[in-house]
Amino acid sequence: MRWLSQICEYWPLRRLAALTDTDIDTLFREFAASSPSKIGPTSTNPETVRKTGRIILAGSGPGNPDLLTRAAHKAILSADLILADKLVPSPILDLIPRRATIHIARKFPGNADKAQEELLELGLAGLKAGKIVVRIKQGDPYIYGRGGEEYDFFRAHGYVPCVLPGITSALSAPLFAGIPATHRGVADQVLICTGTGRKGAPLDPPEFVASRTLVLLMSLHRLSALVDDLRKKGYPIDLPVAVLERASCTDQRVIRTSLEHVCAAVEEEGSRPPGLLVVGLACRVLMGYEQRWVVEEGFCGLDDLRGGELVLEEGGEGVVA
Image (cartoon, rainbow, N blue to C red; front, side):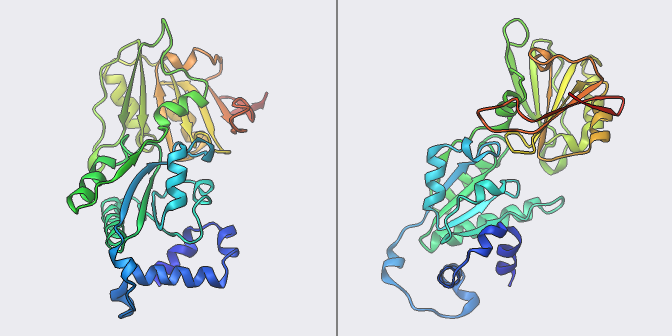
């Protein structure tokens, strides 16, 4: 019942509505093959016994399915079992073939480690059953995605993963927001950090370097403390920053402001995870503004990156440009 409830909770309604009797039979056969101890003995197919499982760690990019690599797309289409992060958006999950079984990581505050262990055990069970297991990870598997840990886990159990890169939001989100991570005469280096360390440990920020663009992932939930830490390391209060949320998705949002006003801006505008913080002079190279903060809504596709509605905020009073 737990397995069935996960399908009902996480599968897109469009996919559930299209299920046929044949699909249901296939789903139960897949469940029986992966969990024989839960349903009693079943007949054994010699061909299945001889089949060797394969594990693929695939980066899904920042969110837009057009930004999947061809290799990742092929891996998804070949999968028998999909293990996905909770933040992987539904347009990418919609690409998964009906015959594949899907498990979404049940990660929430306080349960992340347990959910990760559950995901690894499900993957291992699938491999032992001879399945093609595809672990879909948001962004790139090795950029704060535990990809190295998962590689080590499966290799230790005799299955060497194939790792497929993904476009990381650390570099693509600034691009979609009109922020060049490097710009001649302004920024000659990029530093990617996490705002939250292992078991929730706070970041010890690097010292301020005027020519550096600092990209902080998983940092918005502790923004006030992070700003205080940055100020202690010499970051100017008027330094341009940008909050980038749901990059490349239709509900993408960009908040352009300064270190002084970023907390007030996020408090007033609310949060739209997943998001990241970009800090540095590069934030104002292409996009100038005079207000305390500027909010840009929408992402109209890869042909019109500046599409959508631009909302200018001045002290909480909105003006549509």
